[in-house]
Length: 498
Ligand code: ATR
Image (cartoon, rainbow, N blue to C red; front, side, top):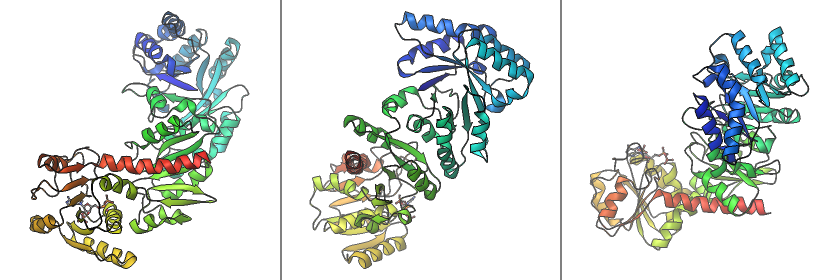
């Protein structure tokens, strides 16, 4: 179920927000600690007022949760505990279906009295524990403690600090599922726990709207629906994802989930912010994932974890796609076909003279691909030694002897002109936020060059704008992204169709 946490400061706005999202959610949680008005009145009136508004808009009613989150638990309530408990009691007689009561309330007589009032009023207790600082050492024991009372819904919201913590949370999921509970990893690292709530059997996932998020890592209901197709997922859904760091800017979830939906395939694609690839491999095995995209900075680090790699991975020294293969993982590099696709539509590379700007990780796969297609390649790099290393590696591994090198600078203009059928830009120069930078600002285009910049933010770099103005054919990194994503999607879909 999808639960909208309303973070509004007024009752009116809270109701408007819940009505506006009604078609995308299954429950609503009033975060009363965030209201900036007379709390008793707002808490007492929210359920009936919301139902009236829903009826008026012709929308169905849904269950309501009352929560008054304390500051120590990541909320905004800073009044006395006695007053908070009085407000909770007001709520228990006002038509809520659930109330969120923290686990420590069991230790005091008034806290236990609240539990009794809830039982008599037929309001189900969500028994919560929040740790905004980390992940408890013994997760299983914590879940067992939360689950002591039959009929209550245990809820554990914790803050993974790294991908090892994320693994521990996933490993604890079966315990919470068996008890019909809720397990949430907060923050960016925890986002997969929110997205996989249906797959892993969490009672609900929380989301919120607007800039004022109810908790770190909350997604919008619209994102859950439109990017992820969250409601399509369930226990039999095969999980895919992208591992990177950072990763939340990735366009891949949008792309791959759309393809899965269009083809009615039971796959779900989730971003994982991972600091150590070994943790991701453990997570992927625990979740029986089908495959994953690999992005910066893990494209090389992933290779030792693979049981087989194809020739493009070896040549590029980089892997951007992993897919389940028997007991292990197979590595593929779809950046290379993705890179070639728009280029070979425009020119036959056999015998073409191509300049590659840069000699880093991305350049290596690209120079390999160009040389394999029969192009003569000039690599220009700020550090010429690095270009030389690349030249040597390709000569030793593949016997390519048509790679020249040079230092990146105005003195290379003539060489560039003679290797000017295609110019491929692989450095980060010109990428947002340094959009005004141009790595070959000193070069004036003849107009006959094909200019390919693999940067995709911005879609049109300064270099490409200059090339277009001179009449060159310009290819942007977005086309390479699309090309590699199509190839990756083919691999993922094939696995799902088996
Ligand atoms: P990637 O895997 O994205 O290629 P990388 O391996 O760090 O990343 O390589 C970055 C490339 O961009 C290198 O060619 C680097 O040049 P150096 O080898 O001289 O470092 C190039 N690069 C980065 N910043 C640059 C700048 N300001 N001017 C010129 N080249 C730059």
